[in-house]
Image 1 (cartoon, one colour):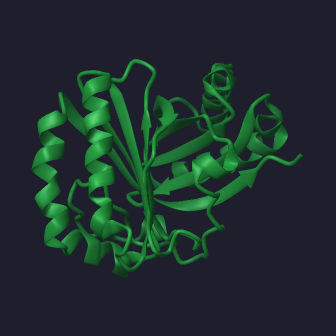
Image 2 (cartoon, rainbow, N blue to C red):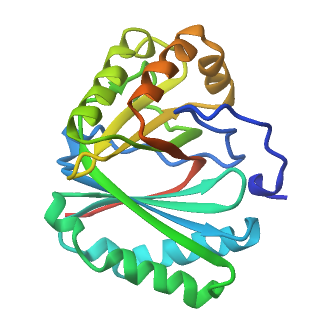
Length: 245
Protein backbone atom coordinates (compact mmCIF):
# COMPACT_ATOMS: atom_id res chain seq x y z
CA UNK A 1 0.00 0.00 0.00
CA UNK A 2 1.43 3.40 -0.97
CA UNK A 3 1.07 6.59 1.03
CA UNK A 4 -1.53 7.79 -1.48
CA UNK A 5 -3.66 4.69 -0.78
CA UNK A 6 -3.85 5.28 2.94
CA UNK A 7 -6.71 7.27 4.48
CA UNK A 8 -5.71 10.88 5.08
CA UNK A 9 -7.14 12.67 8.12
CA UNK A 10 -8.82 16.05 7.57
CA UNK A 11 -6.44 18.99 7.43
CA UNK A 12 -7.40 22.63 7.84
CA UNK A 13 -7.24 24.59 4.55
CA UNK A 14 -4.29 26.75 5.55
CA UNK A 15 -0.82 27.14 4.05
CA UNK A 16 0.22 23.95 5.74
CA UNK A 17 1.70 20.59 4.88
CA UNK A 18 0.59 16.99 4.84
CA UNK A 19 1.44 13.61 6.34
CA UNK A 20 4.91 12.46 5.31
CA UNK A 21 5.47 9.67 2.82
CA UNK A 22 7.29 6.55 4.02
CA UNK A 23 10.19 7.08 1.67
CA UNK A 24 12.87 9.65 2.39
CA UNK A 25 12.47 12.91 0.51
CA UNK A 26 15.29 14.35 -1.59
CA UNK A 27 17.34 17.16 -0.14
CA UNK A 28 15.66 20.50 -0.86
CA UNK A 29 17.05 23.07 -3.25
CA UNK A 30 18.62 26.16 -1.76
CA UNK A 31 16.61 29.33 -1.28
CA UNK A 32 15.78 31.23 -4.51
CA UNK A 33 18.37 33.93 -3.93
CA UNK A 34 21.07 31.27 -3.71
CA UNK A 35 20.12 29.44 -6.90
CA UNK A 36 19.48 32.33 -9.26
CA UNK A 37 15.81 31.39 -9.49
CA UNK A 38 13.92 34.19 -11.23
CA UNK A 39 10.57 32.51 -11.87
CA UNK A 40 8.77 29.31 -10.82
CA UNK A 41 5.89 27.47 -12.44
CA UNK A 42 3.49 25.07 -10.74
CA UNK A 43 1.72 22.69 -13.14
CA UNK A 44 -1.02 20.70 -11.37
CA UNK A 45 -2.21 17.53 -13.11
CA UNK A 46 -5.59 16.42 -11.73
CA UNK A 47 -6.30 12.71 -12.00
CA UNK A 48 -9.05 10.25 -11.16
CA UNK A 49 -7.19 8.76 -8.21
CA UNK A 50 -4.02 7.21 -6.71
CA UNK A 51 -3.31 4.72 -9.52
CA UNK A 52 -3.55 7.39 -12.23
CA UNK A 53 -1.45 9.78 -10.14
CA UNK A 54 1.28 7.16 -9.71
CA UNK A 55 1.36 6.72 -13.51
CA UNK A 56 1.44 10.49 -13.96
CA UNK A 57 4.43 10.75 -11.63
CA UNK A 58 6.29 8.21 -13.77
CA UNK A 59 5.48 10.16 -16.94
CA UNK A 60 6.60 13.47 -15.47
CA UNK A 61 9.89 12.03 -14.22
CA UNK A 62 10.57 10.43 -17.61
CA UNK A 63 9.80 13.65 -19.49
CA UNK A 64 12.06 15.66 -17.18
CA UNK A 65 14.94 13.29 -17.92
CA UNK A 66 14.18 13.12 -21.64
CA UNK A 67 13.93 16.81 -22.53
CA UNK A 68 12.61 19.23 -19.91
CA UNK A 69 15.90 19.40 -18.01
CA UNK A 70 17.61 20.53 -21.24
CA UNK A 71 15.34 23.53 -21.85
CA UNK A 72 17.01 26.94 -21.85
CA UNK A 73 16.74 28.57 -18.44
CA UNK A 74 15.83 25.37 -16.60
CA UNK A 75 17.24 25.32 -13.06
CA UNK A 76 15.44 22.56 -11.19
CA UNK A 77 12.36 20.36 -11.15
CA UNK A 78 10.30 19.02 -8.28
CA UNK A 79 7.61 16.35 -8.59
CA UNK A 80 4.98 16.35 -5.85
CA UNK A 81 2.23 13.83 -5.10
CA UNK A 82 -0.96 15.00 -3.42
CA UNK A 83 -1.77 13.07 -0.27
CA UNK A 84 -5.32 12.35 -1.38
CA UNK A 85 -3.96 10.77 -4.56
CA UNK A 86 -5.87 13.04 -6.93
CA UNK A 87 -3.10 15.28 -8.24
CA UNK A 88 0.54 15.56 -9.22
CA UNK A 89 2.22 18.95 -9.02
CA UNK A 90 5.28 19.64 -11.15
CA UNK A 91 7.18 22.67 -9.92
CA UNK A 92 9.98 24.08 -12.07
CA UNK A 93 12.44 26.82 -11.19
CA UNK A 94 13.54 28.95 -14.15
CA UNK A 95 16.27 31.51 -14.66
CA UNK A 96 13.67 34.17 -15.50
CA UNK A 97 10.09 34.68 -16.67
CA UNK A 98 11.11 34.58 -20.34
CA UNK A 99 12.60 31.11 -19.87
CA UNK A 100 9.28 29.90 -18.42
CA UNK A 101 7.38 31.00 -21.53
CA UNK A 102 7.90 27.86 -23.57
CA UNK A 103 5.89 24.89 -24.76
CA UNK A 104 6.83 22.76 -21.76
CA UNK A 105 3.38 22.76 -20.03
CA UNK A 106 1.50 21.73 -23.17
CA UNK A 107 4.10 19.12 -24.06
CA UNK A 108 4.10 17.56 -20.60
CA UNK A 109 0.32 17.58 -20.32
CA UNK A 110 0.06 15.90 -23.72
CA UNK A 111 2.50 13.19 -22.61
CA UNK A 112 0.44 12.51 -19.49
CA UNK A 113 -2.82 12.30 -21.46
CA UNK A 114 -1.16 10.04 -24.01
CA UNK A 115 -0.19 7.62 -21.22
CA UNK A 116 -3.29 7.86 -19.00
CA UNK A 117 -6.02 8.90 -21.42
CA UNK A 118 -8.20 11.97 -21.02
CA UNK A 119 -10.63 10.13 -18.73
CA UNK A 120 -7.88 9.59 -16.14
CA UNK A 121 -6.00 12.86 -16.66
CA UNK A 122 -8.90 15.12 -15.83
CA UNK A 123 -7.50 18.66 -15.84
CA UNK A 124 -4.30 20.71 -15.82
CA UNK A 125 -3.77 24.02 -14.05
CA UNK A 126 -0.72 26.23 -14.53
CA UNK A 127 0.33 29.13 -12.32
CA UNK A 128 3.66 30.81 -11.85
CA UNK A 129 5.38 33.79 -10.43
CA UNK A 130 8.48 35.67 -9.39
CA UNK A 131 9.86 34.75 -5.97
CA UNK A 132 9.61 37.29 -3.20
CA UNK A 133 11.45 37.26 0.11
CA UNK A 134 10.03 34.55 2.36
CA UNK A 135 10.82 32.90 5.66
CA UNK A 136 13.52 30.35 6.43
CA UNK A 137 12.88 28.13 9.43
CA UNK A 138 15.37 26.54 11.82
CA UNK A 139 15.39 23.39 9.66
CA UNK A 140 15.92 25.14 6.32
CA UNK A 141 18.83 22.87 5.42
CA UNK A 142 16.94 19.62 5.99
CA UNK A 143 14.69 17.74 3.51
CA UNK A 144 10.95 18.41 3.82
CA UNK A 145 8.46 15.63 4.55
CA UNK A 146 5.36 17.82 4.15
CA UNK A 147 4.73 20.54 1.60
CA UNK A 148 1.87 22.69 0.43
CA UNK A 149 1.19 24.51 -2.82
CA UNK A 150 -1.28 27.19 -1.80
CA UNK A 151 -2.59 29.23 -4.73
CA UNK A 152 -4.40 32.35 -3.53
CA UNK A 153 -6.24 34.87 -5.68
CA UNK A 154 -5.94 38.58 -4.95
CA UNK A 155 -6.98 41.84 -6.62
CA UNK A 156 -3.57 42.76 -8.03
CA UNK A 157 -0.02 43.68 -7.13
CA UNK A 158 -1.03 45.66 -4.07
CA UNK A 159 -2.93 42.72 -2.64
CA UNK A 160 -0.13 40.28 -3.50
CA UNK A 161 2.44 42.52 -1.84
CA UNK A 162 0.24 42.74 1.25
CA UNK A 163 -0.06 38.94 1.31
CA UNK A 164 3.72 38.59 1.12
CA UNK A 165 4.10 41.13 3.93
CA UNK A 166 1.82 39.00 6.10
CA UNK A 167 4.02 35.97 5.47
CA UNK A 168 7.21 37.85 6.31
CA UNK A 169 5.57 39.30 9.42
CA UNK A 170 4.78 35.79 10.63
CA UNK A 171 8.49 35.07 10.42
CA UNK A 172 8.86 36.48 13.93
CA UNK A 173 7.73 33.07 15.18
CA UNK A 174 8.03 30.76 12.15
CA UNK A 175 11.78 31.23 11.78
CA UNK A 176 12.20 29.72 15.24
CA UNK A 177 9.46 27.07 15.02
CA UNK A 178 10.85 23.52 15.35
CA UNK A 179 10.42 21.47 12.18
CA UNK A 180 9.58 24.46 9.96
CA UNK A 181 11.73 24.37 6.81
CA UNK A 182 10.72 27.42 4.76
CA UNK A 183 8.00 29.34 2.96
CA UNK A 184 8.53 31.25 -0.28
CA UNK A 185 5.86 33.39 -1.96
CA UNK A 186 5.58 33.64 -5.75
CA UNK A 187 3.67 36.50 -7.37
CA UNK A 188 2.30 36.26 -10.92
CA UNK A 189 3.16 38.91 -13.53
CA UNK A 190 -0.32 40.45 -13.28
CA UNK A 191 -0.25 40.32 -9.47
CA UNK A 192 -3.53 38.42 -9.27
CA UNK A 193 -2.12 35.06 -8.28
CA UNK A 194 -0.07 34.51 -5.15
CA UNK A 195 1.46 31.11 -4.48
CA UNK A 196 2.81 30.24 -1.05
CA UNK A 197 5.11 27.22 -0.91
CA UNK A 198 5.62 26.25 2.77
CA UNK A 199 7.48 23.14 3.89
CA UNK A 200 7.92 21.14 7.11
CA UNK A 201 10.11 18.28 8.26
CA UNK A 202 7.34 15.85 9.10
CA UNK A 203 3.77 15.41 10.24
CA UNK A 204 4.58 16.07 13.88
CA UNK A 205 6.06 19.47 13.03
CA UNK A 206 3.13 20.29 10.77
CA UNK A 207 0.50 19.37 13.36
CA UNK A 208 2.26 21.45 16.00
CA UNK A 209 2.34 24.36 13.54
CA UNK A 210 -1.34 24.01 12.73
CA UNK A 211 -2.25 23.84 16.42
CA UNK A 212 -0.29 26.98 17.26
CA UNK A 213 -2.66 29.84 18.03
CA UNK A 214 -0.43 32.25 16.11
CA UNK A 215 -1.17 30.36 12.89
CA UNK A 216 -4.93 30.55 13.42
CA UNK A 217 -4.67 34.23 14.35
CA UNK A 218 -3.21 35.06 10.95
CA UNK A 219 -5.92 33.43 8.83
CA UNK A 220 -8.48 36.29 8.94
CA UNK A 221 -5.93 38.75 7.52
CA UNK A 222 -5.14 36.33 4.71
CA UNK A 223 -8.83 35.79 3.96
CA UNK A 224 -9.48 39.53 3.84
CA UNK A 225 -7.10 39.87 0.87
CA UNK A 226 -8.57 37.03 -1.18
CA UNK A 227 -11.07 37.61 -3.98
CA UNK A 228 -11.82 33.92 -4.61
CA UNK A 229 -11.41 30.63 -2.73
CA UNK A 230 -7.84 29.33 -2.74
CA UNK A 231 -6.59 26.17 -4.45
CA UNK A 232 -4.53 24.20 -1.95
CA UNK A 233 -2.69 20.96 -2.66
CA UNK A 234 -1.18 19.10 0.28
CA UNK A 235 1.66 16.90 -0.87
CA UNK A 236 4.97 15.15 -0.47
CA UNK A 237 8.13 15.61 -2.49
CA UNK A 238 8.65 12.58 -4.72
CA UNK A 239 11.77 13.60 -6.63
CA UNK A 240 13.98 16.53 -7.51
CA UNK A 241 16.19 17.17 -10.53
CA UNK A 242 18.75 19.96 -10.60
CA UNK A 243 20.34 21.33 -13.77
CA UNK A 244 23.95 20.42 -14.36
CA UNK A 245 26.54 22.81 -15.67
